[in-house]
Length: 159
Image (tube, rainbow, N blue to C red; front, top):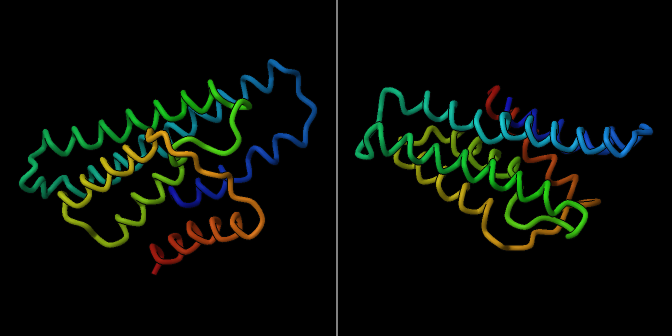
């Protein structure tokens, strides 16, 4: 479902721009989009992987696992706040977008990882969201390839 949400998120802005909206409505839409991204891509992966690790806390222990999920969620929310503040002032992204980090976690989940591997993936994906690395916005073939990633994940999870 995270992968399906990524597909919807990829095109929601394009759809919203087809309608005439006041500046206030655009601003509210941007904040609502970030709120839904925080839930779908910042919190949902944590819940999915916490369920995975519920029976196998491994050498990290329950506290270590929850700390890893907290780091991921905090980085996602920080990343979204930065995006809202800097929107329109930079082209592309700084750090990987939150939906991409959620796709990384969903891809790791597909492999049936141990709790330690899942926790490491959460922390690395979280750090990648807040790293000051410029990332271009995908267009054309790059956008088509990006959309294939979540579609492939959905298909593989169904199989």
